[in-house]
Image (cartoon, rainbow, N blue to C red; front, side):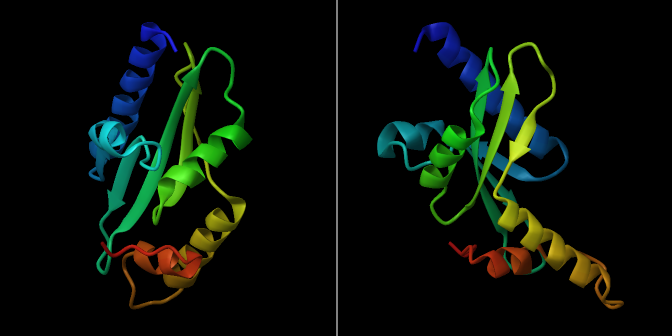
Amino acid sequence: MGRKSVVKGKVFERDVARAFVKVGIYARRMAPLQARIGDEVPDVEVTVPTWRDPLVLGVECKVAVRPPNPHSCWSQAAASAGRRIPVVVSRTTGNGCALATMRLDDLINLLQVICEQSQMAEVDAIDLAAAAARLGVVTDR
């Protein structure tokens, strides 16, 4: 991979992390760990605070001239996510629209938990940690 592509990827990873931070969600690039540990670390780790345990996403970032293949990107995201919920964020060069890809089962389960909790009168906030637990994702560190 050429230097220009590497720089483009790093800039996109920073942009993705900043998008989460901008709305108050903790996110960090994992590049220093990737150099030490290898491919089993996602590009960006996102930690969503909840009133119980945090929800942790492993985000694989892809930017290219042609749209990236979602299935090959997904394989890499799943392999590097570990105990995190794997997500792929991709964008084509020159297009400001970034897309997020996740397993349909993960999305459905998250939406079910959100719907269940929004129907409870006593609950003011959505418990994302319960959603993660329902997906079988371990969120404690």
